[in-house]
Image (cartoon, rainbow over all chains, first blue to last red; front, side, top):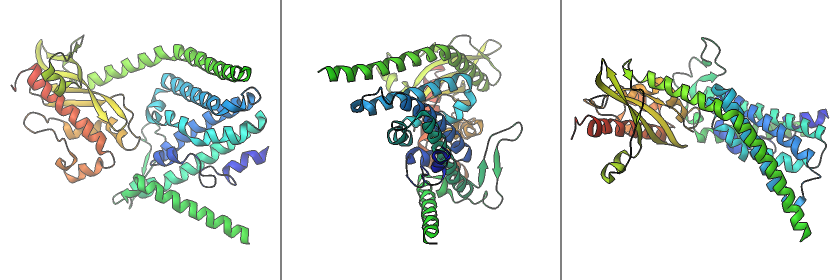
Length: 206
Length: 196
């Protein structure tokens, strides 16, 4: 069971190894707080969809499984969106546009198709948690690089008088703005993936 | 044939259950969301009113005049601002076009079309880029403009340090600027008639 959990974080990391869900990942990784928010949303929806797909795997006819998964995922996302807007309006405001984006995150459909419809509920829950946390950590890593280099700040949760923005002296006054824009997202992603490829190939040789 | 019926029946069943669950949740959350939006509107109205009193009801702007509809079709409704019973300005609710579709804006104007203050309400802009326009500092570019000083409508009309601040979200800026501009023109030509 533990293997199902840790594989999502390292061996089958959704961003750097199986390269799933890149579109929303690159879109929202301009600030650390956005990465955390998107990650939280993905973990929740992934957990819900994996549980339901695994529960219904014998009920859903094979021919229409993809539409059935899409209905389940879209319902979960809409549910999250409505509940969040009603009960956590400030969080909804900062995450608003990411929540509907989760529907088209191929990581979720990918896990439903590749894992949850073949495995038990318990394994699917661990898979969802591992994949979700792996996704969140990778996203946070990309966002950290992009925000520090591109804006010279680190944005975390605002608490009380602290507005959540840590300014890094030196970079803040002269940031490399390209990292904050779309091209920078691809650059950072590419370099990080190259680094992880180099790292794992080195480990294999030794 | 039976197989097709069974397959589609199962899919229909899943859809029905999903729809019922969503309808149920919507019924619970809709009043809360509505109340929150009204609260947000009231906050925005008082932020752009410069402490003048705001009329209780708003006037809907109806496009039956073909001449005005093209230019001011994005102006939805307006509130009258009064100071001791004298009309001193207007608050307009304007729809702007952003990167993520329409954005709702509330803009206060003096009688001469000068911007008092503006707020961006519902929008689907990108967080970190276009969404920055929700901050009150963003609107400082436009304050006290519209009468003697023209409203900047394009990025190259801004001083370079301000142009840098909006870079990466030029479409949002153009949408906001255009909405503020047409609101100002609406006040001047349609409401006060100071520019005919």
